[in-house]
Image 1 (tube, rainbow, N blue to C red):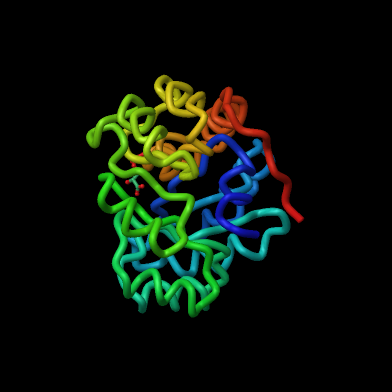
Image 2: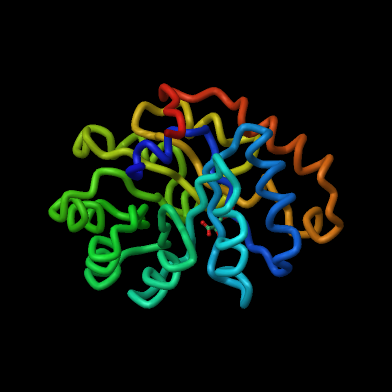
Length: 214
Ligand code: 3PG
């Protein structure tokens, strides 16, 4: 799948920071069954690659690696079975590694100039980060006129309460966020709460038609 198809699977890509690989399978199943098949596992914990490996074995789960900062991260993510990568910003080295590895990349931007650099490289779908602090939904709306062919996945400061403000913009394809799986809720293995948060996220209104997993 390419980045746009992955982004169109559901309104929200949950952003996970997982310390304990034991929760990988039950967590991915709760998200998948609740309607959020595209999952970002950030490379911010020592066991993140192990988590990606375990989640990737679940049929229907489209597991990506987040917080990619270097070429090495790209290759590690690919080797662990990640289907896509997400980065908070972007460098030519990161972009080239993703192309070489065949890893669809959702690169981060926060300004028009960063967007123009990626546009030159043929990128058409980007993460807008940190969305809330960088200008929020009005900023993304303002980027539509000069960049009519760019789609955004805003991430950073998105919540169940403000997500639709972003999702209803025609240039927003989905949003990302950690609110669906709060760290303390995960530590308690509170699958009921995570399942409820997942259902709410999966049913948010969006301007985009959905895609399906192959
Ligand atoms: C990310 O990695 O994209 C962000 O840390 C997620 O931001 P949030 O925790 O504000 O949802």
